[in-house]
Image (tube, rainbow, N blue to C red; front, top):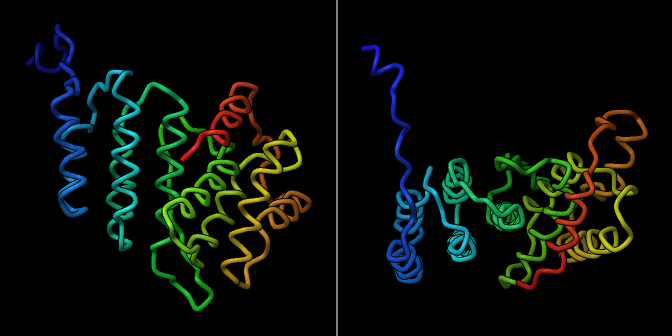
Length: 229
């Protein structure tokens, strides 16, 4: 019993192999979402993913994201990142952006398109959400989708959680505003403009003013917005 509760040796960790990634890519390409997401979790959950393979895992996840059709699909994809262990912080942001983009297929929960898609990834600060959400909008367009009210609704809340828009470097401000404005032009809603809403809530001290970006996060987000899809 003592050895059971205080083991001498460390718990073994499964390492993802090239053959598994090859199989995953083929399965996602040829099989329905339900089979692809199941295999993704079997291979990736709590596994050690060699850094050289991370790019392929991100691409596999993105291909899965393109296949979602229902709220249940988006929830399954959301659960799949809980135990996804990535080392490269930029890859984490790409995964989160692809997941956020799937909010586009979610069903509205009110006549105004209301929806709450709670997302998060270990090691990713909510302060980055203001930029990651804009990247998600870019994903939506790159996949040939038209933005929907549930996406717009969720973007509002993700931007609310993010760093102060006015504190962002000018280049990042321009990027965020471009994609948010484009989404709102193509998806008419009664919702307040996300940036105006964030600033209004900050003025009324309804948002934690301590939410800000570190220098490393700012550099990382600058790299993210320049990534081609």
